[in-house]
Length: 344
Image 1 (cartoon, rainbow, N blue to C red):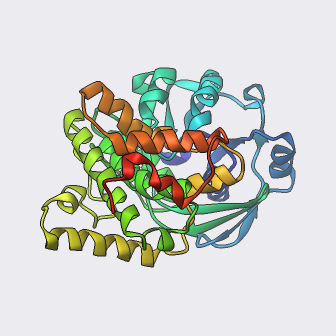
Image 2: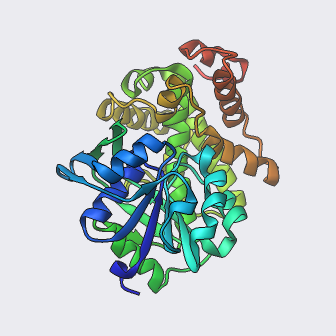
């Protein structure tokens, strides 16, 4: 199948979903867009989405709907770009418009493929690492803030011609590649989110200031240690993140020099991305649930299944849920919790 022959529905008109739909439509692809808000859907259909940033500046109208009954025909591909907590309910509603031989691409943060497969069927899911950044400025104004890539793969089997067509389609947005180890790539990004996004949600600091605190750096390291132990039990081969950060090498060695190198690397990350604000923190500030259940929560669920002790990741999940429920505030003082007392 040629990529231009694919009929596509993008689910989610936020920053990633909206820009994905807009660039595909601009390049002549058969694409429609699902929104949650009727006013937004009407605006996208009549006025168009205004996109700017590293992808250029343009405006494009896209057929946009709030109900699956409005979608025109069945689709080869559903690019699912809602927030992770909304994914299962949304995917279930969209199944009637997915062709028998079609697939749902999980574009969420975290690892959602298992849950998505429980809704759509194990053979209907394509895993995706979305490695570029975007911001929603308003309902009709989106900005691509950084370039990057897509990594696509079937959980549990090798790429095929259809997956190659999907990669060709998405490559009009950013470079796209296929892999036979999508779970390894997803888990690699999950570790980064479990450290940066979740710790930022707990303390409320920008990344540079947060990683300037030694105790938080030590917690950062322990999140990775626990995550790697769980991946070993699961049989996941973790890919090197961004082609540079090898988590297994990162946690190897216990001496003074090895530990100094770890702290220096984390300080470098903090300096390079010092103005980065946790996506989970932004969700909390908007009064929305975070995706922690698909970051640290994924580590914890699988640790329980395989009999691995992961006290740091488990407590991080609990603390963020407590913040979501307004039972505690966002503060560096949260790291005074007894679970973190061994870190200095």
